[in-house]
Amino acid sequence: MIFGIFWVNRFISRLSTPDLKYNTRYSETYKENKFQSLTKGDKKSEMIKLLGEPIEIYKSKFEHSIIYSKNNVSIEPGSLGVENHDTIYPIRFCRFNFKENGDVLSTFNRQNFIDSTYLKKLEKLNYNEIIEKIGEPLQEYKCDCNCEVYNYSRLKEGAYSGKNPTIKIKRIALDDRNKIKFKIDKIGNPYNKQIGICKI
Image: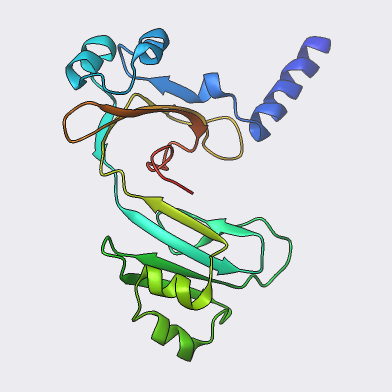
């Protein structure tokens, strides 16, 4: 009876709280101590010799966004939306996304946070001019690493524990000289490829 209650409690806990050990799978030859021994400036060849081939390799994408709001919201990378930390509805915000040259790429003006006529004028300006016109944003998100990222961990196949997919993220970003720019050793959503390489 007690044994049964223990397993039921463990099952319920696993539904809401991510079990990182259960959720995380690593590349075939990955070793934690070898990952930790690598430092900035080490060569790609040395990294491959120690860790072997990664699960995947991808190029980080440029992204630069700012957001204005009176609500408790934050930028959600890779989209036009936001993450809402408020209980107040409807939430109102304006998000600007920029090209690499600083020109406006797109905007998302929810609930007409900025008057639409004025927003059309702002969309013709660049990043610096917008900041000068309407002041500091609530939040800024910039991903300009331009790195090649070697990913050594992934989410297990099938059902995972916790409400959202959460694992130990083990990635290494290389610069254009094939040297380690930085290691990403974080806990987070494995589908967010920008984790650890962007500035907020």
